[in-house]
Length: 270
Ligand SMILES: [Zn+2]
Image (cartoon, rainbow, N blue to C red):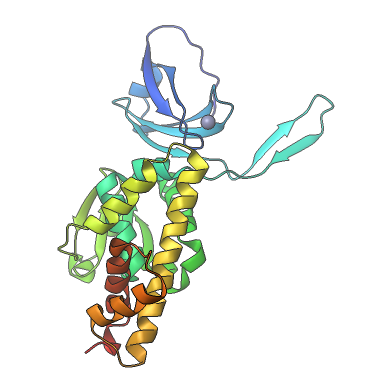
């Protein structure tokens, strides 16, 4: 049951970062209600100072465990008619925060390679929100990658024989940790790419840059596959040929593209 919270008695300040525009702000929460919520994680609707509204999930230790945008914002104007605002996406940094940076970079690697990635957690709303927002980043190139991502509840995951997922990436979203890592790789290229995008201040530009970079890397991966299909399988030769047509291709992007092509189209490579 919903109730309007009276701000009397003990309150505690928590800091929030708006998942839409990244503005920092703090709110006061009543200690009793949060600490005594038998569900463990409280869902709270926030009308933030920046003008955005969203839900937050707060655990008993007052840690913000996740954010969620509503699927729709419906507002009544003074005449009583309904205005519907377009759905806004979570910012890139909000998605990264919800995953934890290391877990995000691993999930990103999974998506790029088209290798299965299992996300599990206790809160269905967080899972759903993350799934939608994460998939959306890769939307343009998604192809077979959509099947790479699988979400399940913690109970579901724990009831499955771990051997079933021993070759897949498994991420525990409750603690933002990678539980099973099939890559054995520091994922430096992905970390650098992400960092470059997160360094962009403007929220929209940040996400657009990320999407653009992902799109380019997939494009290069396809070009590399063409070379492979035509019989050039050596990376040095491919790189040379590609640099002849476009000498501005960053070395790191090429390398990541080659890794993707190699993994996705392994069977073509000798
Ligand atoms: Zn905002």
